[in-house]
Length: 82
Image 1 (cartoon, one colour):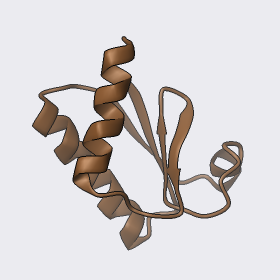
Image 2: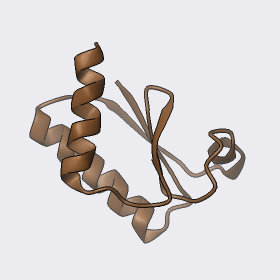
Image 3: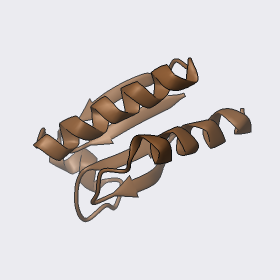
Image 4: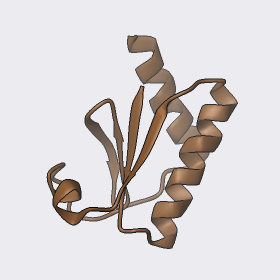
């Protein structure tokens, strides 16, 4: 699974990255977690506000920090899809 946290490094972006890593730990899952801070790269996903969460190339959340349970649910759905 490939996960990208989109954002310039603001506190919310850092919080989202931490939440993603905690959710992965809860699930006992491994993933390639990348932090994307390059503005053109962030804009290429079509989000208008950060932070953004991209899982396997699909934007799942943007403009807010989802809770740990929501992130877990997103990741579990992706794992179930194989």
